[in-house]
Structures are given as structure tokens and as C-alpha cells.
Length: 601
Ligand code: OXD
Ligand code: MN
Image 1: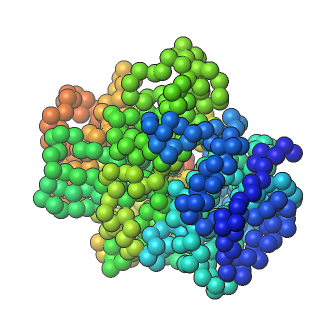
Image 2: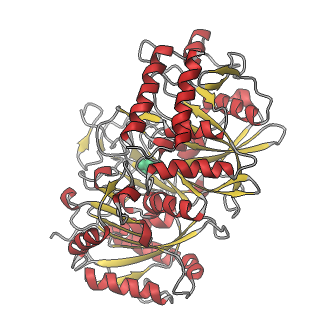
Image 3: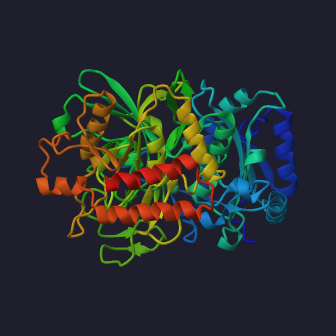
């Protein structure tokens, strides 16, 4: 096997701080005995460690240093071209029974899977350094916060984990020496980055993740999709909280009244843009702040839902990011960032399709080949990514470190739909809102390997991330609702509806503030709305469209409900629920009947 990650040798004082927890040491010993690394590097998250790892990564061409003047303290990483997105086909939930994983997950029997993975990991780190990365997910003083350890043979993973999580000493201190403490065991090895030996396996009952054969963030930053969502959702149900694929934002009115909103959109549908929205000029005095851009952990407190962002960085899609679409993201990624699979310009800057300004006359594309504007290939991979610390975000919410979380006034579901689904509407109540989430659908994007642009049902944007039976997950949502005396209002949005000519009807980006304002007004009980078969719909004058260049016909189309399209849509809901083989709770089946009935009234 070709060694894709040769060992590094650290001077004294770097990589040698062993934790004290015996259960943890035993586990590292066990994985070390299996994988046979050249040496073990115990990460402490220090600045000195980071500098050393960057220097070694530059020597081994894992990173390329970018122009210090243009993008200070930032680096480019190129992944193997066969390894550029999450691989849902190779992602498994390994519960004792297939029923526990449910109809939407790939299931694999735990004992057999451990045995297969241990076979692949046998001697896999020979000639390599095995890094032990301690981290916490969640603000340091939150009751929801979890400790995780990721063993990896990838320096890129260590450097990314340092941005994406609170990594190092803080986790060791939190873990302490209690051998029974709860913590997540994550093992990652690049192996030889061969798609034939690529598996991302979750063992929820053991709080364990094993990921092999990939170096792509979504498959290997085990804190994120694997722990915070798949294992997280399993633990959340067991422990009575929620782990969701949601951004969290704050909205403050000119009068100083603040609300928090959580929103679930499938991958690469603009969560980061929405979380960092800058209100247009017309909304003078309104402020939007970011708590999180991808994941929300939520708990019930005093009958309300409170949310924390378990992460401490953003792993966002680069193409399309610009000062027009997301100025706060551009400012965030202007320094201290790892870029993956973007193009490199001749002056050491990064470039991607959709960046402001003209394309460079020449660049090196994401594969490392020469590129010019005449090239047929894209310069940056459509799923190229930035990894950047959240502290760089000029709009970071002041309560992002608040352990109890922020109180959620509204939950928004949304997808990428060219037709059928109006710009925005509000559910009639919590259970109806759960139905909106459960029947959400979106046109697929490049964030996952596979065809792009096909409508697929993606309940609560959790289809690839729910770590247990989706029917039980729906029931968990319904049960949480029963504990809420002040439940968030639930909405559905669609920024992507197209008109007859195939053009987007809604300008999106900052203008989404207009929809957000209506949502906030509804939370304040002063927003007007019309009753419709779908739920509450803004009337033409309920949306603040002042100073927006949009004609009435467009607005009518955006808010229109086409009965023919909805007959098809409801039939699709039925087909989807039927495809789940009887796991959908009765309340949701009757929600569908009620929806169908409202169309006949
Ligand atoms: C992500 C995803 O990377 O959802 O956030 O794929
Ligand atoms: Mn995501």
C-alpha cells in the first residue's frame, strides 16, 4: 500500500502530553496495536503544535501556503480527485438490528462490520504518525456538550479539527480521569484513499465511529456529520434533546427586540449564506447575527426550545461565495483558513467560480492542472470548501458561547424546489410543522456524490444524517412538541422557485431578510397572513417588498399554490411515507389526510 501520510517526528514538548484517563489510554493502545503506527502524537491544541503541524504539512505537500499578504495564515489542500464529497453509499449505521437503523439508512451488522474494518485497519498506520485529537462539541459550560476523541493518520484532519472544534486541553480537562465518563471514540485512517475501501461506519450503541479510505471533510472530520448529527441524533433521542442539521441566527429589530431562528436546509442550499445574511439598505437598524451555520443541538428549558452550536468553525461550500452573496463569509475566509479543492492563482491567491471580479488569466485548477478561462473544466470543484474559525465572522452572535443556548422563536424548513413550493408559508401548529419537515424535498447538490438536480425527499434535511430509524425520529419530534409550552412557530421557505423562462423568481441572499421579517412579525403576532390549504401564507401586502425591484406578477407566482402541482406533491408525500414501510407515526399520516382535505374545501 502506498504511504499517503508519512510519519512526522516532533521535538520534545510537542505531541507528547498524554491524557490521564485510563479508559482513553487503553483505547488508544488498542487502536495502536491494531494499526501499528510509527509513533503516536498526542494533540493539545497549542499554537506551537499547530505551527509544527503546518510546517510538516507544507514539507509533505499536504498544504500549499497562500500569499501571506492576500490571505494571511491560510493554506490550500487538494484532496484525491476520487474523494471530493460525502459518500452516502458507503455510510453505515451499525445498530444491533436493521430496524433500529430504519429504512433510510444503510445498515450493517456491528460484529461483522467491526471485523471487516479491523481487517482494513490492521497495520494501516505503518510508517505513519497516529494523531490523537481530543475535542469538545458545544460551548464549554453547556450541559449538552460532548467529549470526543478522533484518532487519525491525516495532518489535514488535525488542522481542520482545530478550527472546527474546541480542540486539545479543554477536552482532556473535561474528560478528567473518570473511567466511566461518556465520550465518543472516532477512528479515521486514510488507508490508500481507494473508493473500494471507503467506509464511514457508526456504532451508536458504542458511541463509536470508524471512517476509512477517505480524506474529504464530511467523511473524516468525525466531530461534524458523524458525531454531532448521526451519533448525536441517537444520543439526543435517548437523552431527550435534539440534534439537527440547522443553522441558528439572531434577528434584532431597530427597537432592540431580538429573536433566534433555526433553519434546516439540505446540504449546499445556502445555510451559511442565510446564517450570515446582511439586511438590505431598506432594513436600516435590523441586525442579523450568526450562532451556527450547519448544526443545532437543542433542549427544552422552561417549555421553550434552546439551541447551541456545537461547532467552532465553518466548513462551507466555496463556489458562489462572493461579496455579493455573502460578505460576512468573504471576510471570515480572508485569513486563518484552509481551502480545499479551489484554484490557485499565479500570485498565490485562491479563486473559484462565482468569486467577485474577473477570472484570472491563468490558474492551477483543483486537480493541479493548468487552467485558463477557456478551459472546459471548472477551476474549483463544485464542492470545494473553506474551513474557517467562527471567531472570524464579523456577525458572530454575542451569545454563541452561552451554555444554556439561545431561545428559538421559529424553525424554518426549506429546500431547493424549482416549482410547487411557495416562497414562504407557516404551519398551523407544531405537529403540522413536523409534517412540513418530514415531507421536505430538495433538488440534489454536489455536497454528496451522485446525480445533481434530482428532487429527493430529505426530512428535516436529516436524510443522510439521522443515526436511527426515521419513524422514531419523527415520533421524537412529536414528543418534544408535547413538552413545549411555548413551541417555536414552524415555517417552510423556498428561495429557488423558477418562472416560466427557467429564471429564479426571488433574488435571494440579503433580500431573504424580507421573508425573515415576516417570520419575526408572525412570532410577535403582528404579521398579517391568509389561510390557505398549506397553512398561513403572506398576503401580497404582508411581505415588506419596499425598494425591491420585483413586479407583482412575480410575487403572485412566488406565493401561488397550483392545485394540480399540489395534487402531485401530496401523492409524492404518500409515496415517500409508503416507501418507509410503515414506520411513519399515525399523527403524520393524518396530517397528510388533513392537507389533502383542505384542498377540497
Ligand atoms: C455539509 C453537508 O458539509 O451538509 O455541511 O454536506
Ligand atoms: Mn451540512
